[in-house]
Image 1: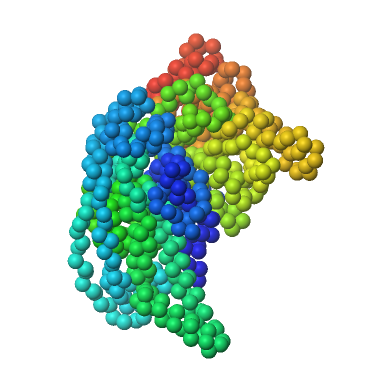
Image 2 (image 1 turned 45 degrees about the vertical axis):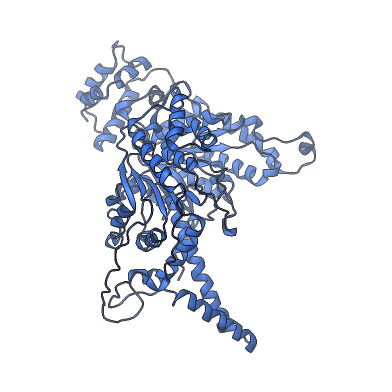
Length: 639
């Protein structure tokens, strides 16, 4: 039977990590995981929810292990989008600076606005920085034979998770072991900050991480950290299985003796290789690398994580680890309604014992601040400077209305493609260039993505040369697929489409690379995909629920109104006639009431309300005035 980690690898693809603290970008703030009904609405038949999304790059200040010496493209922090410009300044100014001092510098420079809710968290983090400065964890080893006792059921499955559930494949009577004594902190208590999306939790934790003078620290998205845990568990299982297999298959007496001795040594070290013993080994490994753990988006969504949380963290806490975490949920709501949640519940009081819990209680979502965006309606944004990055993120979060799902997957030909971020309210996805073009994807994969999402954001398209021939070929294929499906592409790029792929005159004369000849087609399509005609047709081709799901109808921006106008002025005449007006009102009815039965009476009321000059058609100014107050729209359409 394929192990859970092998299945995860097949589902999620190769997982790469960068552990260089001085080059790590912001880590993406995760949004609440979709509830079942939301997942169904989001995913449809071609999208499944990822078991454990892997979005970001971790940062470890200690030397990486050999298995970690690979790189990953990070994603800018969603919770600190309004602060993207000061993130670099924070890093540069962090030497010898406390979190409080760093925050005040950013306020004084005008890069951020003062927020009382954030200031409370800054004070807590400032106090935490003082406590951990000079702190040395006890590092007391947790003997593996002291693994937490489990209850043996009457009959249970074997295997790794079987041990954690209490199954061992036997049929002995159930024996309830006494609970071990509750451990208490011997060092500084950590901090668990929770609250709404975009309130600045991740930004504030980044200030703390940059400022705190601790060598053995790690800052990582929690889901990625749990993937690392499961990979280490799988490695230890596989290692010991290989030792057993070699001991049973060698033929010479000398080799057999050596292998048997190795096996005995391994058994002595692991005390029978129970699931809990492996968890202790992994915890000891990870603690040796970093004892100050800064987790972004602390949430538990999968049973394989839930059942090991208490044992894993009991080892870390008992040996002196300090945890700083951000989350969208209070501890009591973690893994809410999850499968076999009682197995997870003992972790919650442990978390509260070792972390102070603080609700940031902010009503501001800085991701949705759209200063200046109404004047910038580009979908191909270059050059790719810090302002362009912020603009792309704002556009995405505006469409999402602040509600995103992490870890959807597109399934095609037996493969699964991880979607870093997607909207809950409409089929809109967000990728980086590396997500789509640094991986071995082909035409079928790009078509599957285009079939699943009507709008796709792609960040950080770099300048390309023949040295990146594989990426160029995939990018050309991707653009062809998106164009074929009439997908809306919103992206940031280093250069304009014509200059994006640089080829020398000598290469043009001597190279036989098909990419050189295919690029002209790609340039033409990238330019056409920015045109009003292309974008208008795209807006008209998607169904009403998907289209209107992109907007907060009660607070439409000028940009939203332009997008809606493109859809309903179907003949590009500059006016909405009666047929087009009827379609718009039917779309609103379907979105809010699930039907398109627009009565003649309701239509006349709406027409009188929107056609201010009573000339039988609606111009953009009348359209804009009508939607300025959605209460009036709701009254006339009767939704």
